[in-house]
Picture 1 (cartoon, rainbow, N blue to C red):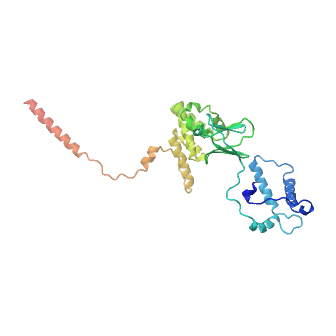
Picture 2: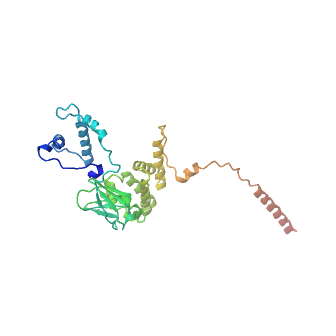
Picture 3: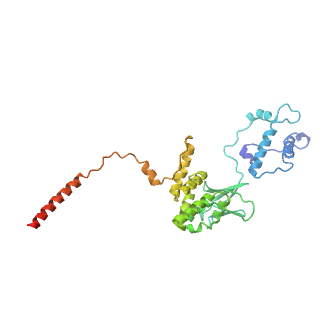
Length: 313
């Protein structure tokens, strides 16, 4: 971390015996931590899990005493805490900055790998901050994409959501899209999606059914993933193969979670036009009258009778 970021002044230790006490304690405790916690090398499934382990070891070490000192490390730190300067309001940026241009495939090249961004950014230059385990893409100061960092060279990580605006215009490209394959592998495109898609294609045809599925995927920008999958399952069970029906079912599930627990009712699909009719205000107008029309009918009968009498004469 930059010394200017934390507001400290650096200086050289005094050489020889006069400066031997200035730094040895710090270096010695780093060696103690390494020997006791990183020997042998710990095993972890991810960098985040390893960092959690380090935090636990750090908390445990705070309760021990160094040598014959009367207080623990935590107790000494509480004495020093009021003397420390406050942390800076803005965190120190540890990522590396890149400014690639988005190619015609809506992808950017960072180091030796490629990552997707929304299709609206094709041809534009974006700002990328590369971290140890992930990268963040900004259009000006707005975050537009976030990816887990690829470690191997020549890889490609695509987000299906970035291509939906293009795919809804060309639904025929959807089944063979690489982004769809990666979404399946990541568990974002579930078997429930596949089942609803197959039913929609059977009911509406390949083009219309696939377009309906893409409309459902666009709903994920406003609805939680688990609610949307549950809404798909409910709509599929009821044979409701429109994006409106899925959206309504997903919102009903979200509303049911927010409401206090009660007697569970049978879940049904309500179409939007039925829902709107049910929520209209009551109609207090009187029933229409057909009296004036009856008068017209009487006049027609009377004129018809006179006409027939004239013909008879």
